[in-house]
Length: 332
Ligand SMILES: Cc1cc2nc3c(=O)[nH]c(=O)nc-3n(C[C@H](O)[C@H](O)[C@H](O)COP(=O)(O)OP(=O)(O)OC[C@H]3O[C@@H](n4cnc5c(N)ncnc54)[C@H](O)[C@@H]3O)c2cc1C
Image 1: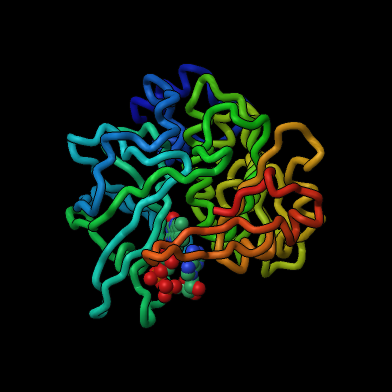
Image 2: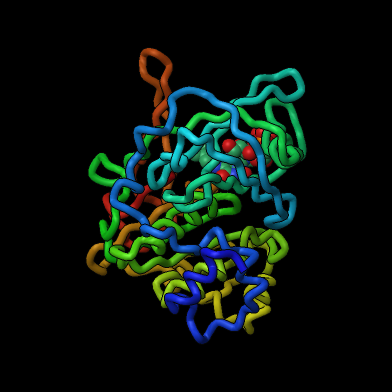
């Protein structure tokens, strides 16, 4: 059992109701292990030691994370105590694939204060023109490098990144790999002894076999003392599906609910906090289609220098119909 897991167990953070075996929990150790000092206030902001520009990072670990998906662990150089990304931020990966220079975004899943390494959850799509970067990353073997740049802080509320206890409740709607930034967010908040935010994460996949990092989510929920509730739904099933494999192994007790079909008004109402509650905030992440259905489209605008920025636009879709106001919603 890893040293960090031992300290989590000793501190009584694993709920007695959780029946996952120690071996299963140990496999997910990096996600819920509380860092020795806990998340600090500085962990939420983009940190000065994150270098600008692209640098090489070496892959040191790789494991299956779901259908066609890998969890990739990269080493941090000695000059970087942590990745230095804000909550929530990301990295850009640059690589030539099939003769084309690609440059795409990925969201680290590991908590902000993780030292020595960071993780990316990457799905490998069938290569096509202008694509193939996910497949290239998933084919990397330990010892090989990827060129990455740490992106600046994402200004989520009041022109600033999220901070501890900024909201009483946060709801998250994730489509597919859209779960990656939320893994980072909940792992960071749950590792912060001073944070008390209640978290509802709703993850939508096509089928139960597409569930990503479900064992890690189960471990986080089990260790959260009830603060994190994870809900799954599967767009291609018409009857409430069996919970994903990780939840099944605990008798389904770890996942708060499992739905059938796409996230619609009724499902969102059942799984998310209500817009009339005080201090509630909802984050949405997924493909443009998913974000549009959940909260209305994001617009991309370009300045005179051709620099792209995203405009949130009005809150439409499911969240709009439920009565969430624009200041309660952020589309990642
Ligand atoms: C801010 C941000 C964070 C991201 N984080 C992650 C992450 O943590 N893990 C990850 O695997 N991908 C993530 N993506 C998507 C990633 O940047 C690439 O778009 C994805 O890897 C597909 O690229 P490709 O070259 O492999 O294939 P492509 O041929 O470009 O695309 C393959 C398929 O992926 C679909 N696709 C394109 N963009 C997205 C998207 N944003 N989300 C879901 N599907 C998409 C396409 O419609 C197509 O069907 C993120 C994107 C953004 C904008």
